[in-house]
Amino acid sequence: MDDHFGFPYDFGYDDYTVKLYQQEHNGKLPPKPPANIKTVSSCVVQNQEWIEWTRWRADKVTNYLKQVFSAIKDSNSNAIVSVSPNPQTFSLNCYLADWQKWERMGLVEELVLQVYRNDMNAFRRELSQPEVKAAKQHIPFGIGVLSGLKGRPIAFEQIKTQVETVREQQFAGVSFFFYESLWNLASESPEQRQSALRSLFSSPLKRVSL
Image (cartoon, rainbow, N blue to C red; front, top):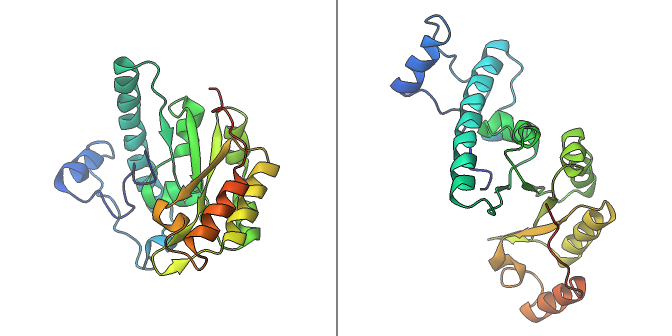
């Protein structure tokens, strides 16, 4: 499951959800999104009423994941439940996906954190967050590296530096977003990118054990 296994911060105003919230909050209506929220990137709001509304919806998503996890394991006990979320603060506040809680509850067996940052200081900062360090000690924890977007190519030197940083900090591995930009949507030629990738991944490794 990726970062969209959640509930966007401005969702939940349908009749069913509003009535459920009222039932569990003595008839109180949920707050409207604060006026200062203009984009998803600014959805972290220090307002107690909004925080309560966010937490309540996030817990509903967590309860749903419990059901999904059980259904998967009942169907195939060898299946691995893997999640690729955004960093925790953004993930919880903007998508109501509390992966830190999921990991602590044993509902996630492998995690690939999307650290799509061009600035290396920001990239390293996300890798050093307390929740990342805790999860890394508990389950296989990989890092999602941005290999480019349409109209936004990423130089291979940046990809190489980020992969090496992930290895230095002994994470379980890397995953790229997205396949087409690994070599076709890049400033370097496809041949150059493929050659560089072969060099970067010259030795096969076994998958990390759970």
